[in-house]
Image 1 (cartoon, rainbow, N blue to C red):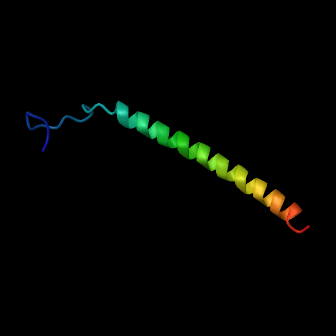
Image 2: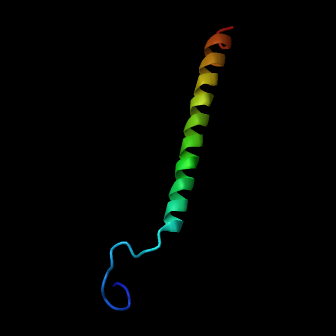
Image 3: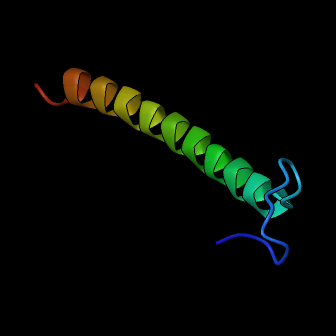
Length: 53
């Protein structure tokens, strides 16, 4: 298991796709966290202030 000459060279693998995937994952995680926080704030406001009649 390795490259054709049987030696592993540290840092020789192209990880640009890995970096792009990680950046996309982090962006999605950030936006999701912000959306959930906004949703929870809106739920707290409307359910507490308007839910009790």
